[in-house]
Length: 186
Image (cartoon, rainbow, N blue to C red):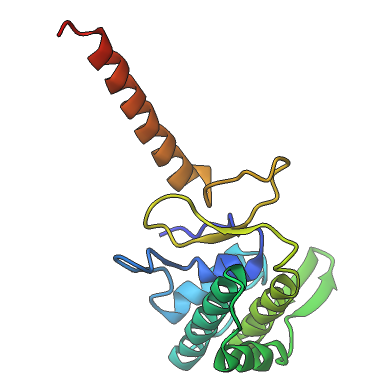
């Protein structure tokens, strides 16, 4: 399974590791190794961190707190106090350690430093949620949230690879069937 980074914010990309929340949830963080791989693929760390089942559980709880806070923020609702506490506590953990080596920058950490980075990204996003164009994907069933940084401010899908192409293909088939239906003798 591949991770996608289409949300425009680390915390939203992390929240996107659980897809289809309202229908048939698809979990991308099945085990600690998946979390370690996500940390590297996201660019947060350059080396896979040690992660155990407890760390994975804490990060999944953080992911859900971030998701709920963003949804509440998008809807103009008050943020749940428990979720605020979860994010604020995680943000206080030590960040990843950066070192400059002859080979370049090396970023190392653990589950707590992953949580810290995700929580800090969430805080930055939520602090500006009223001025940013934060949206949920327009594909029915997709629950990924993204920051719309398009020039026209009209981005509809989390990403073209999965959702955008499917919506556009479906719209094309509908248009084609209408044209074919109008052209057939009746």
